[in-house]
Image (cartoon, rainbow, N blue to C red):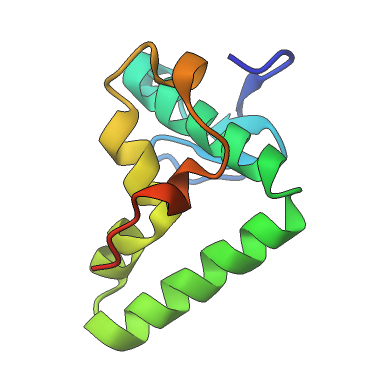
Length: 115
């Protein structure tokens, strides 16, 4: 677990928001802490590691570029979101409590099978 990672409950995210949390610059934001269980936290901590190794700005540029590419390709926002390499890595490994300890750098592109 990254040192200093904090979960912050904020009113800036609507309570009926589709997602439990979002990670920005090593901070995990949520509209309601009750929805941040161990699996959600691991998912977001994977994003923390991804953002750190991509030096934040390139991460967000790549994330957006992939989402736009898949949105054009699939014409479906939810499917485009799930196809992003960063999300595929996080969803594939968020149930594994040991994943962050053994995760290799740039794992989202290592065995990436672009849908």
